[in-house]
Length: 419
Image 1 (spheres, rainbow, N blue to C red):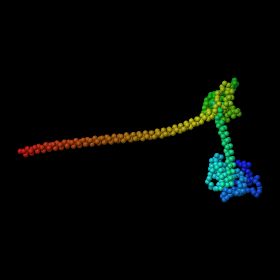
Image 2 (image 1 turned 30 degrees about the vertical axis):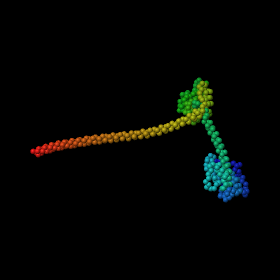
Image 3 (image 1 turned 30 degrees about the horizontal axis):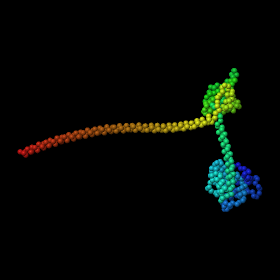
Image 4 (image 1 turned 90 degrees about the vertical axis):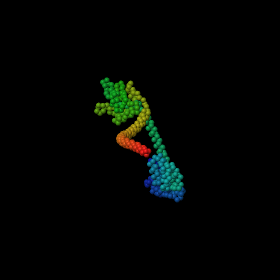
């Protein structure tokens, strides 16, 4: 991403660490080191040191490391993976990512969020590859400086671009929306007065775009060959006018085509070719200047206020309408489901009513049977009771007769004894 190097900052390159040929300005003497030798020296710098923080006193290594430029150091095998990852990210993404120090012992688990914490770590290193950490500090500080400058430049340009777009949106437009139609005059009459399309004829020709009215430009010699199509004073009217303008452009009959004086008569010779474009303030002033008493009234209003905001409102209303339609469909589905449930329950209720009627009928039949049985039993029991009562009365009479007979016999015996 940010790979351009500065020769004044990087210094002469005496041999790339990736195996490139020696620089053409490198001195030809015995102290010259090839890229292979420099790679060997740098690989030795990451080995464990027995001398602690001050154990690295190799002047040849320091000379080799310091002789490399910024871009060459980024490509060194110790730092290459780190800077390849950074080059694939934006400045903001680099500072939001966790990084591990490439100069630390292999497998070090400590991470640093962004370039600044990584630089602070490299500055404070005291026990492991101190010189390599110092070189990492130098490379990271240079990288941070370059990325910061590039980041601010991009943000500044982006902000200006937004401002231009916002300014463009709120321009002034002719209101009501008007499309100027050119080449509407078609012939000279006997009195040398030009004729042209009438209002009804013009409205009929473009009825698909729903203009509300039309006006013609007339001068001392009659029709000037220019007409106005006036549209509804609404965002919808503006969109229809804009649609007509775009359709003219698609057929190569827009403002620029008219200014170049394109084809006026169709190749068949039967029809005049019409041109059209949206009217601006200059167009309306020119039309009114050369149209005599038939001037057209208009205003210059904000495009944002008259079109953008109403369209946004229509979109919001459309979204609300879509939501209401979806809600209505959902409610209809729920209502239909409830109706089906009610119908099902009503059908079940009718079945249950029929079953209850059948049960009631069967119970009534049983009741009649039980009543008949009870009546029959009642008659039997009554007959048995009557028969029993008759037997009791008969026995009572017999007992009474026996008592009377016994009494008579006892009286007779008493009389006999008396005599």
